[in-house]
Length: 353
Image 1 (cartoon, rainbow, N blue to C red):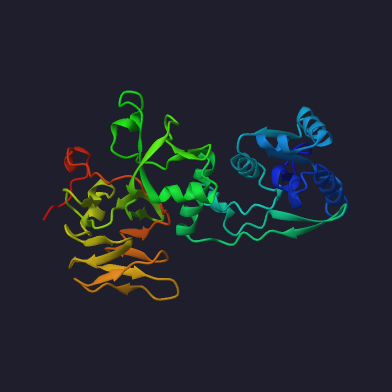
Image 2 (cartoon, rainbow, N blue to C red):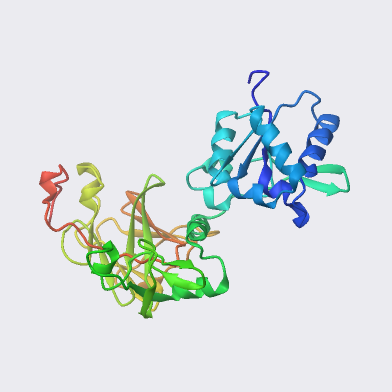
């Protein structure tokens, strides 16, 4: 890290707005205290949401402008991704913030357990610095944190707006005026504007269709890398194995030939009953293991249904692939398997018996 590179990155929006004060002096006190307590030669760089300007008094606005003119700060529409991008670029820099970045753990796995984050604690003009713990969180929690973060740009932040997500909605515009107008339901989270539900595409008022289906989503992983997300609607079943067809997930699309041979044609079945997901081993040759926190993996007996929890993982055919339940609670799409492309045309042509 060069002399001019930042050694401290400040998440300006939550720092300035600490204790609901909207006070730029929080930044000045941090700079002064850090140089006195930690590093007299520290180089600071701040990143803020664009909206911070509207919460500052005249002094704060002038100071933020000065930092920006001097190349010590910038404002962006959403600060979190920019902060983490800079933190990755300057791997030795400390980040001063109050945010735990839970909704960014998937794209930035280094956040899990990171010790680079510091929380400022203000007592008048003096500042104490406490290490901000970022303990690892499970994959399903990462999913719903991401999901909640995606709602903010749509205006879904109030209890009334979030209650609207429990229903299905239809666009009220002419079929030719909006892509969603041609569909019986909007297969995405609606937006919320001026106290009403609107289409997320055209922002015209939406019409309530009925209660949202209790759909659940499963995640397919190869060597801990996510390769697919598959929705399973209430009352539906999904067979996992080496075979195409309705209500089937064909593993030949993601496995090489040597791996395909380990998975049976009808390996296991996932079933959704009123939002509870069950797994049933279908008598496969290489079996299915259930991996639960704090317990040794156990082999699933054939033809016996087992309810899945968010903490559980399913291991197929000696760890050939894993499946877990997603933490997402608003799955609005439908699973449509590819029935048109033969496996041998994609190079995935294992045994079909």
